[in-house]
Image (cartoon, rainbow, N blue to C red; front, side):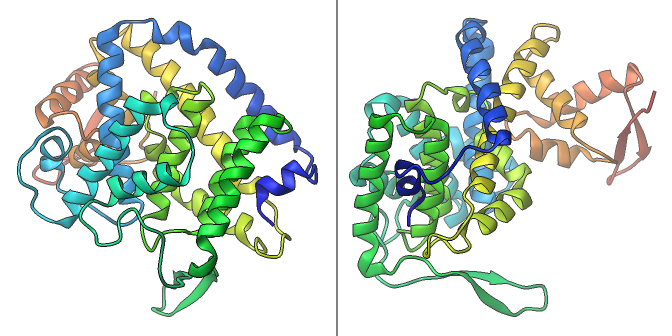
Length: 348
């Protein structure tokens, strides 16, 4: 039994934790217009950086890596790509651009979902088409063995399940029985359990999360990368998905683990958005704030390369200038010099 059908039937009460999340998201959404009226240049910088982070992080969650030095060219350039990994990242950028440009005009339909998959997958033979063979989600263990973690919907029934899911989505919004944030998180869970495509389901699910947020007036994903926040909480992402998918086919499962995770991501995005804009007003610019945020996020030592990985849109020279300023102010210190230099925050 799909999650949206359970909610339409009124079988689930909203947990207190979820209610608190919804209240916080609602308050942040209410302040959204106030913050988006700030400096257009600052918002432009945030949008560009979010685009980079989203394309990089959503693919990196799937194990797809690209050279940091090539990121600017891959995302914003038109130069020839070196390999399939670079193509995957640029394709995801195209899908993101499609959503940012169309957002409210792009309704949730099978056609739209297939188009997002086609854009995100690029020149792959089955881009934009549902899977033709059954394919379960396989979990690989540290000892090299593997096992079936979740049995997805059979290929022969995929189209029927997707049609039903989309009808349920429009019905649940029309009947207003469930908060739309709960509904979009539940849709995301059902989509991942159906697993309609041979490959790329995770990336399409993250694109859908962004699109459905737009439909509900939650525009924080334009400025803060939801994909990057998911990557930073990847273990929690996989754990909640596992907990909420167990027993999905039989209707004996708890969807709130994954729903609360989606709420946590949106709340975190809004908090970061407000903090970053507030910090930018007190610092020289958005890129400076990005480097400060990256360094603040390290629990132990860190290197320039690790900062660059967190700030793919900021040049190495800029990172070093900001670090030099922070060193002069006594905020950070170098603990290992040389080619493999390591830094740490100064405890005060």
